[in-house]
Image (cartoon, rainbow, N blue to C red):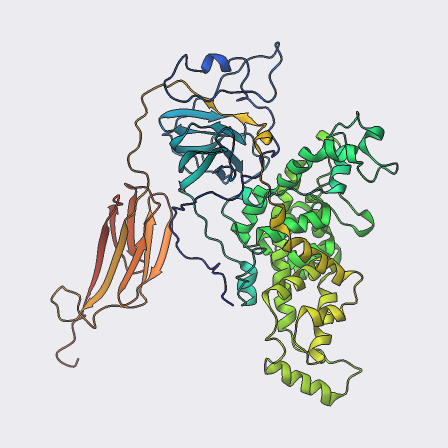
Length: 629
């Protein structure tokens, strides 16, 4: 079985996709009205006439006549981004099926949920547009359109530039929209796979990493979520008998479920941006994390089981947080400062009462219940908690590795000879060879749900029996209530994940349209967007002093670092004296510095549009003494 390659390496930033995965998340939660919300002045901003396509703007929530009109923000597209810990992301997506009217969707979000308003501005060919809310739709005409856009925040931050080429083709039943290229590509590393030293599965998709957040949007019928949406009044089903709920108020009726469907889809997809961030930053497969939120809370952040001290989207309790705090010193320092005056001691050396205070502070930060917030929930708090839940899953991966690596603990009911034989079998590696990547994830979910002690006892029992460490054997030894059933049910949901990927229809496009701005100054259409150049670095020792590299003079395993003027770094080691950097996807004209770290050798140049740039570093043979000292 071949293994997927999730390990980090430089990959070209240009990705060509014919028919990106399903256009998902059309009904994502709309941003609150802000200073940039368009009102009655929109009609005055539209060009009087144009010979090219001009999307019209339709407000989802028109301002009342008495509202005070505000103007669109003026964006300086040439201004450099400000320094900030906040990162903005923007994406473009297209429908996969034939549509009656061709369009693309632009989405954006901020790495910190409560960071204010995020909007998008850019060019469609030479026409400037702005999206005052995200997601937003831009309708197209047949042919090819080139997009250049960024995300902006009302606090001054600017996201990376996105460049995309979109083609609209007319077919028998409508139009087919294809994103031909986009200047975005993310390299993912499966952190749990690295921890375990076991390659991930090749023939399955449940552990795949996705390039864009909307690729994990789903359309599932979740009865608990629908019930909560009806109970809290988020969904109005007053025209249904009994308000769309069963007599016990614990189940939606058919009428109530119909009323709640669109909001239910919107609600289950509103955390996908932050699930994607966890997959990128912490290496947790996004479908696993999203399935965890579904199984634990059905995406309702107010789901609390007080009798188990469990809170939030991941139903996290203090026992789970103890695992994370033991393995994440940075998280410990962050929350320790909120409850203790002295945080110089490590978490494990604190008194039990002090540890409990810190665990309580972390768990409380994941509680999204907020009596003063709309609908009694702080959704920003819920979105931030996704990042912690991802770290908690990673900590349980590490805990599983520690449990499997642990020596056999003798069983007092087993004679010494049998125990000695079991230890010898473990030392020979005879009982771990059948532990698969899927089994390791099952162990991780068991640890997350029931705690590591229950899993540890089961693994120890299997080791003492000299059996392979597989889920089939370990699950038979689990004594925690419902542990095996939880894991098996979770994996069944995960295996069927792709069956529920969200593919909206034309009727689902009920979001804000982009506004086409009057041309302020002529905007030249760029002729070069992406470089296809290579940088070839040669390193050799000039032993014969002829200033030319020859056989036997190349230097292997020399570290070469390439740094761009946009602060991106790529590092390679020479093979046979040569390291080649593929610069596909970078912008021509940016500054490039090639250096040998620690050796004070460097060379700088501007990246060309195409071709090969050769950089040679020559070392001279040191002179040898002619006489002894």
